[in-house]
Length: 197
Image (cartoon, rainbow, N blue to C red):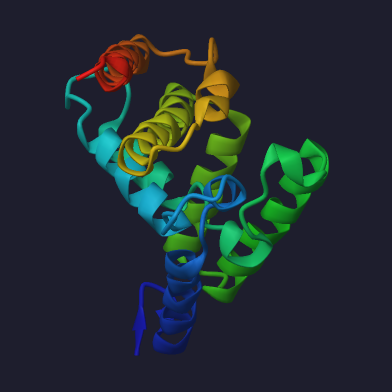
């Protein structure tokens, strides 16, 4: 039995690829010795939830942002979570991820609407070619520093590097406001923890 051009076998194979992301730990947290670091799938989930918070009447397509959030790191199931510190050029990383997306989409079948949509969303995100892609890229960076803040609070680790890496890189007013609020809360938490009791 097929569902819109996808065989049951292809669907299960694809979902198993997605399942690999549940076990793939985010490299940045592993490199910084964070205890029980989140998975790529954990990150993608909250990124999609960021998109869900968009108003229906916003200038961007909310549903497209949600879909883009859940496919933006799909290639990492094959290539891993490559960070800027891994010594892989941006061009090589993009090629590896593009090839992985092509392989994943091809496995879904040539007539698959899902494969076509996944490929288009991934390329749109990578190229930051639309307002939706720019919003999701901002959410991607924001979700990372929100997670860094949570790890700092829970584990008393210094993850300032993550905040430094995103400083001045947020493009959308909405996410800029979220970042400002996060920084305010983080500064207050740090000040409170430094106050003698």
